[in-house]
Image 1: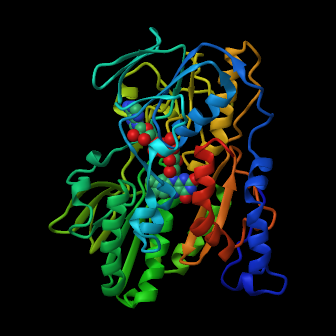
Image 2: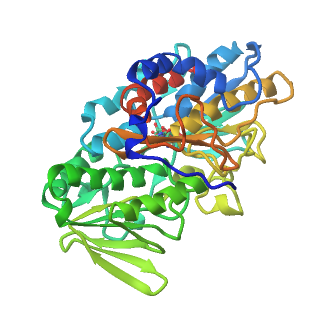
Image 3: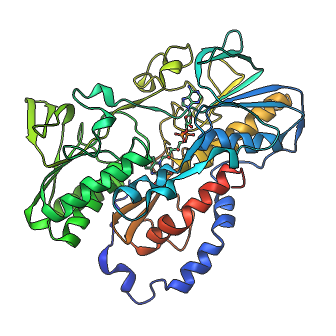
Length: 450
Ligand SMILES: Cc1cc2nc3c(=O)[nH]c(=O)nc-3n(C[C@H](O)[C@H](O)[C@H](O)COP(=O)(O)OP(=O)(O)OC[C@H]3O[C@@H](n4cnc5c(N)ncnc54)[C@H](O)[C@@H]3O)c2cc1C
């Protein structure tokens, strides 16, 4: 693969760089461009007349987007969505709250505003899958039969696999974690804000295995380094970024960029470090390394847990039984059609999918049209023609006000949606997109509009 060079800092001050008006003009067309760029291969079919019972598990980004698409794709179907959570969390905003850019309230919405009329919402959790009998059982004992199932319960955050760690500790003893909840992200900002002023030793962890938004641990480390510079603590701070092996990011150009950027900003990359336990009162973290256990004393630690399929799915016959995706018990779907490989009336969408790429909301945007259109094609007894190409994206924030818009596919190839943004340039444009525009695009996705 050709080596790409990143440009930063003064890049947007060079002659010919975009001005604000050009950018805003471009962003006005964002929806259209994104739709046109769509990372799916054919147009959707007209509505299919059916009396099929379709059940969707999970009312997060993927489940709600799927519900909104299916009410338009299927005429006469009975559609049920199952999820006990009433709040909708805008997770791509978590890093902005945890670094003091946004207030917490911007993260929380109401699922009822997005679940379409005519869809039956069962406010419970799926406790059991029985794909041989085409039914699921909820935690409160409801048995729900289906003809077709869309599985979209996101993933489980395995904090309990780190000895001494619990989400109750976030905000205390220098412990931060942006992944757990909107409340946890706010508490994390309190921890980081104090650190930015005082300095000390900061440890930023990254677990092994697939995680949602693999850019988030990186963004948190880089933004903390920037906050330290802004608030005076940088000279008194030592920063460690721990990774389980040698890679920092799956896309090779970004991996190279980060391996140069972290040392340039004085962040020490600790390879082959896997967090085993923490001792909160003593503020010590112990890692497994090839040389044995290593304990690092910290003032602040950003804990990122391993992630896996929710327990009810793990206990079912539906996860991969072997291969790399069996490790997290991810759903065994075909990586292109998103259809279950052993139960053809089941499709997967979002973080739960055991595919090589794509635990982001950006991937949800690309996956849901594929899974729902293929499901509709199956109901209509037509050939499935839609294919997911592995599209995933992350505005990789490097400091407050600057980011790189990283978009790539299964092959690791950069696939920029916006011709006016160079994917190899650290720039203020992706920052403005992340800060001001992507939440609206996300909400449009929930409503099935992009
Ligand atoms: C810190 C952080 C930063 C991120 N940054 C970005 C970013 O910059 N860009 C980006 O594109 N993406 C980002 N993401 C990732 C993005 O938010 C997720 O990939 C996306 O939300 C996945 O959608 P989902 O529907 O699969 O899961 P979720 O949106 O997590 O929804 C899952 C839903 O399923 C429900 N559920 C769980 N178990 C069950 C059950 N047994 N029965 C019924 N319902 C169940 C849950 O209650 C939840 O409502 C970020 C995520 C985090 C945490």
